Image (cartoon, rainbow, N blue to C red):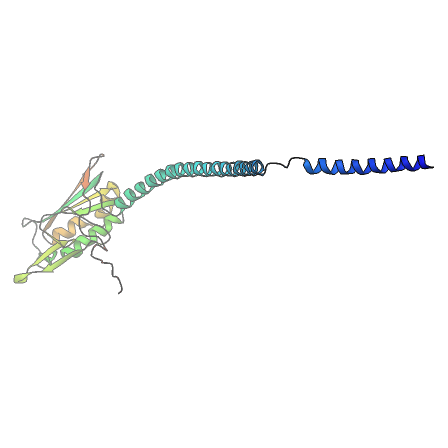
Length: 247
């Protein structure tokens, strides 16, 4: 009986000693270096930030390359557009009469000729109605194949005027584009020669002017270098306009 008690006592003491030893070993185990752990975390964080920055830089590069390509494409379109605009501008300038035109055409020279038969009822009427007579001829030419017309070098455009302006002494001056011109009056027209000659013949212009003692000579000029009508040199609408700033 005593022997059994001794065994249990020794067993209990051994268990207690084992427990105490375990606790001591556990408590004696070295703790991890907090400085090393902190460095590891910092390094990991820095790597992740660098990776994110790398991704952002790649995105910026891709965006920049896309913009460069867009600029190149835009530049190409701009050049094509500029060329088209320049062609349009040249066409508009030509149609507006701002550039000279050369080609087949006719000249109509009108001047006083005292050797023509005198008719008291009609002689001298041209001087009174020169603006209207020339205006009628010009309108007929434009309606029948004329592409460009000038009178004594003054190009006719949509804003042109042909008018008689009263001067001192009861005389009148003929003005085209407000520029005075004198006889002989030479109308130069580039265009369809046959059509222009046909309308002048149909309206019997030569005979009508002869009744006023005005000789009218119509001369065709064939070939690519037939006649040249200079560009309009006068002021254009809006040249005198000024921008008004309120306030």
